[in-house]
Image (cartoon, rainbow, N blue to C red; front, side):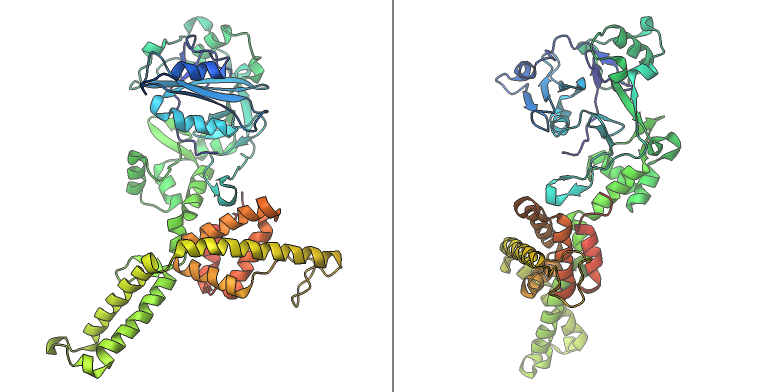
Length: 468
């Protein structure tokens, strides 16, 4: 599933699931019943319009999704999501946002509400933010206490006061100022398809109650960034800042769980993983601890050559003949050499691929031995003190664990990629549960990885979080 970051512009009049607060637009010029016909509307030579249709996940069961640039308004695009049991959503987006929004529907959601909360027909989930690297997807986290709000429960207004826009009347720069409940009543009066008690409007949940929402200042505090940094992220569309769950009086508001999960994902990004195994470098910037140690070793070597070796020491001008001056030069040489070696001389990408294969081989062998010992009643008792109630540990050869630990100390984010890739491949190819793989790798790094005090924080940012 892709991160949902698009804002809808309007509801199509033939939608079954209207989005609250958005106007209704006449969609009679779009063939919303046929995905291939929708695609054909936008498929023309010249590149000004586009269209596409796909089966939605799960294939064969989830219906289809299609989109097209509007034939008369090339700055707008229609997305239609149809499911055999839950009807149709017809939504108007800015054309620039259509591809991103479309991808979100292909992966299974029937609809999105409240800044990315989504529904699969039975369960509401929070906006997808925290990446499940082994599965190459996002963790799906249900919303506690969520309840679905249908059209039947909110219809109270008069039909005669509602309005439907034509596509030419859509003004992207002007806020909608209509009476939405009246528009909803007019929409309901013009339809005879899905029953109104099955037409989903939105959701309610304790975390979405107005008193529980937080503003930009609290969002920045939860995430550990400055308010000015958050404002810059939002203005430049950077850092995957989640969509707000509500906008009241022009002020964006977020649910606290969404804020916390954005902060959680930021802690699991490659840069944050690097920071977990880093120390201040010569110039104050964080560098991986392995690189810092290599720089220190080279500094001592350069200092011995430049200062302690008398034939060289005598070459220094009188005013620079102090250990402090030469030590400073040696430190600079050590820092630059360590950085250069790790960037260009040591093939860390090739090492990562080699480690992936080595770890998968170790896990396959561990699985074979585990099955063999289980069959003979000797379950995991090869190590002293291990009982049948302990977590399964397939055991990684010390030299392989040492190499993974070296990579984690020198290129933490690369090591994180290796671990998550191996975890996913072991589950897909060998049927090894991710908990077994993660426990096995964690034990191996603890025993032979030489990560010291940084190990726990590194694993916290790499392994599956306690709350998926």
